[in-house]
Amino acid sequence: MKICRDDFALYAVLGITMMFFTHVMLNIGGNIGLVPLTGIPLPFLSYGGSSLALSLLAVGLVQSIKVYNS
Image 1 (spheres, rainbow, N blue to C red):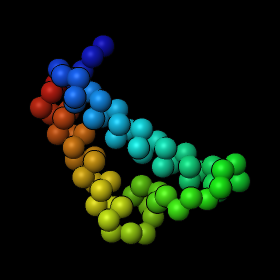
Image 2: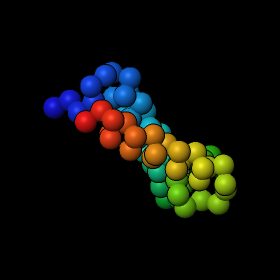
Image 3: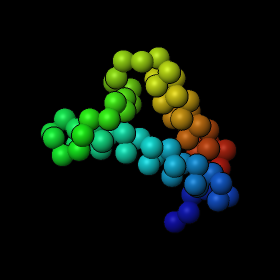
Image 4: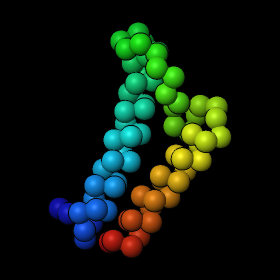
């Protein structure tokens, strides 16, 4: 079932979701020793204003796409 009306909105949401997924998986893998620590911040939990601002902006973009494309 396709929720978005256009492909750009679908790919934007998919890209933001993958960004969060890779950040979380790299942090989990680094903490349990599967991958080397890379310094990627954990979304919404790590210290840093620019990372938090970008994460909040990305979630706002996803919510806006959901409101205007459903």
